[in-house]
Every structure is written in C-alpha cells, then in structure tokens.
Picture 1 (spheres, rainbow, N blue to C red):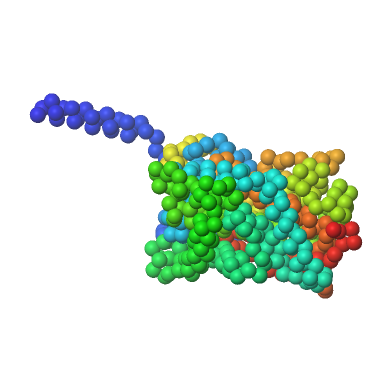
Picture 2 (cartoon, rainbow, N blue to C red):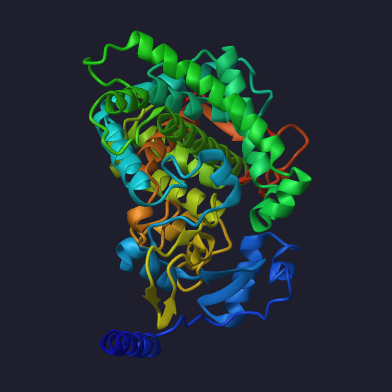
Length: 489
C-alpha cells in the first residue's frame, strides 16, 4: 500500500510541475468588456467591419474583443492577416461553431465544416471543379452561352431602365449548369424559386436578429429568431433533393462526370468507410456551393456594372481597349485577360473596392502562437479582409475607386500581394477560379455591347454605391440603362 501511495504522490508532483511550467493563454489587448454583452455595445451602432477597423486604430493589428461571453481575436491590416492565414498552416484552418450554420449544416459541407469532414468535402470539390474544366474551355462555353442570353434580355429593354439584379441571372445560371449539369430558362419556375430563396436567405443572414442569435443561441431560440431562415433553407433543400434525385435517375453510375452533383453521387456510391458522403453530406455540399457560388458572382457583376455607370470615363477607357483588342464581333476568351491590362485592372479594383465579404471567422485547431501571443485551441479568429483591401500602407488611395492601383507607369497590369478578396491559405475560396472566369467573360461581353448609364434624370454621381448589408455587402437595388453601342456585337 505504501509504495502505491508513494507512486501516486510522485505522479501528482510531476503533473503539478508540468502544469506550472506550461504557458497559459496570452491574449492581445482590447477594450474592457461589460457584463453579459462584452464589447457588443462598441460594434452594434455601426457596420461591424467599420467598428472593428476603428478598434484596430486604437489597439493595433491584433486585438481581443468579447462577443457576448466569447473571447475573439481580430486581425487587421495586410501584414497581420497574411501572417495568420498563410503562416500558421493547419493551425488556423478550422471554423468556429457558429450557431445558425450549425443548425443549417450540422458541421457538414464545404464552408462551415472543420476537421476531416471539411478536408474530404474540399478535396472532392477542388478535384471536381478542375475535372469539369473550370477556368478552361468547357466552362467558358457555358458562361458565353449565358452571356448571349443576358445580352438578348437587355436588348429587349431598348435602352430603357432595367433592374440591376437582372445582371445576376447569367452568373447564377452558369454556376447552376456546372453544379446540376443543366442550365435553366430564365422563366423556369425552379430557376425563379432558387434565385428568390437565395436572395431571402442572404438578407436574413445579415439581419441583427440572426447576429443576436449567433451571440446568444439560448435567447435566440427562446425568441425563435432563427425560424424564418430555417424555413427558407428547407425550401432550398427540397429543390436540391429533387434535382439530385433527377440526376441520379438520368446519370449512369459508371459514366463520365458532367456536373458537381455527378462527382458527389459517384463518391457516395463508392468506397466511403468514414461515411463522409452520405445523403445529408451530399446535400450540404451542394447547398454551400449553390448559396456561395451564386451570391458572390452575382453581386460582384452587379457592382461592376454600377461602378461603370458611376465612373463613365473608366467605362469608356475599358470599351476603347475592348474595341482595339477584341474588335466588335469576337466574344471574349479567358486567355484574353493578358491582352487587356486596363480591363483586368478595373475588375480587380471592383473587387478590392467593394469588399464583398469583409470577414469570415477562423478557429485555432490547436494552441497557436501568433505575433507573440498564445491563443488556446478553439479560439475564434477574425481576419478582417476589408482592412487588407483598404490598408493605407498597401494602396495609394484606398477609399477611392482607382484602377491605377493595378497598373504600372507603362499601363501594364500589376499583381498586388494585398489583393485578397478570396482570402488566403488553406481556406482560400474554393470557387475563386470559377468566379474570376465568370466575372471576366460576362463583364467584357456586357461592355462590348452596351454603354451603361444612369436612368433619365440622374447623373452618374447620383447612383447609390452605399452597400446594403446582407450576408455579403450587396449593391443597393436600383436601375441602370444599357444603351446599345454601334461598335458592340
């Protein structure tokens, strides 16, 4: 008995020594929290990304805020964000458990999953998009088909005002063709329903009610704040399940993969010992790609058109370059980007200027040292992408729309390291190549054919460029005129 007791005492002593030597968490500075609300009183009055940038001016590029009772580390500016996203590798590759997305996806899918489910879903998605020809000829052909349909629809307006949101139909349908293996007529009830539901969900996700639910899930559940968005998500899921069932019925299991759904079906029918591609996982992956793929490309093309209406001299210079390089009849090709430096600079500046998705949180997958601080496993970390795209140490005129940010003194396109609208590191946007191709082909084709102008009675400076908060920073709903060009196709 005595030797056993002595051994236990020795083990206890070793454990105490190790605990004493183990470094505890070391948090960055930040504002003092209030009971229950933390620092929410500093973030609620204004757009959150602006409030966080103001706190960065006071506390530096790495600081701590309390979102309710949750300690969260915020990174601001190019140097801090890049060091974290690129330099930490797997340590900052997880997502924190955000309440509403936990309810929607249950830890599945491509974007808000972590660990092995995320790795498997991402690897399959990357391989599938590559095999389907994203960034190359096959997908470019689908996008040009949508461009033709979009131009035909705009011609029907005869230069009269059209709703800006109409421009989102073409990139959305190009994405649907890739995901589902079929495009839709613009009047198709499934197409109309999907676009309407995506719009409603994205607006709901950006409301203060949903932010409150994410901070205090127990209170949000009591007040039923999450019910409206869950109802809409279920409607989207019902459409996706019907499309998935139809695809299974029409696609031979051993045939060529012609869509993202085909790749998921094939993987689910094959060897899946960990059960990562069961029915619910497949639907979750498609749901993520549908929501993110349509929203980002659609909103960016709308912003690009709106900014051309707001800056007619920039639009005119783009059209001069297009007429000189492509001529009036030839549709654009992905490889034309190298020959269109000013157009390429304008598209990059649109994405920099609008900061479509200011921040999406990460989470430490292990105890992580970052810029002299020790963050425990599970710490939410918010890389402020808007602080990178507006960093005054990286951009000459960060608050102005200035395509010169991406041009050298000789008018050649210049790649900028601080251009991170798609994030960076292991969580870089999986659909970046698709989004770039869609935006380039649709934007250049649109400006080949039309001059974009404000509606009658408005000046260019009257166009509203104050973002409408949703899950992304959308352009406000308004109208433009697309006046056919004599030089256009």
